[in-house]
Image 1 (cartoon, rainbow, N blue to C red):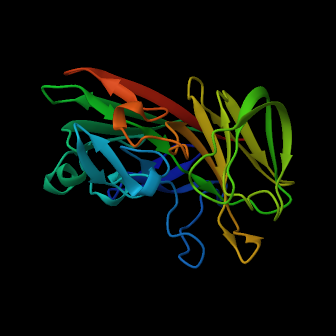
Image 2: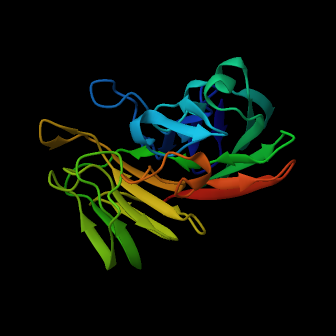
Length: 275
């Protein structure tokens, strides 16, 4: 589906309800999923963010297997409504998801264009007769190279990775202002902060800003191949985080997990501003 206004043209794929293109003034801002580097552009992460310890979790004394970032990104969404500047998708549980995630749900994803902004809204509804547990996150990749900078200007916690998607039980409270991007930035995998309200990525020609108020975590990442950064940078607002190395694998104990009571609704949004 294509959304368009006087500022932006945005393309959304039914598979994963994934944004595949954001164009302003004939410039493509979103990574075009070159499989030589990374085959995705802006996947939605659900019902987990990051990686489970040993790719498994325990719920009600039963062990379940789930790969990194969950299954939403690889499922076809149902188109609910569409206009020139807004589209709404829905994903519900199915036989495949129930094998690895014993919860029924409605996951609505809405994209809306307002001037130079793309507003992404997620709504999660628990349709079970019991409590539901989940995480959700975004993973947009932007066409920025080494030499770009990330601006944050925030006192925050930095979570420590050591070349593994799982997290050491260590965090450092630091003042973040400007982060230069080079081939040393992601040698230990993603950079993860908490409680970042706004973050800007820029080079000498263009910039984008993510407004992520109330998101508890934010990751910055690119894929490192033979010691070199790939030609994109991801800014990732998350309601959730990878398992810590000392996690007991119990889903209800997972750091950053969210619980919804019967019929309860969780709703949040973030905004991509093309400056």
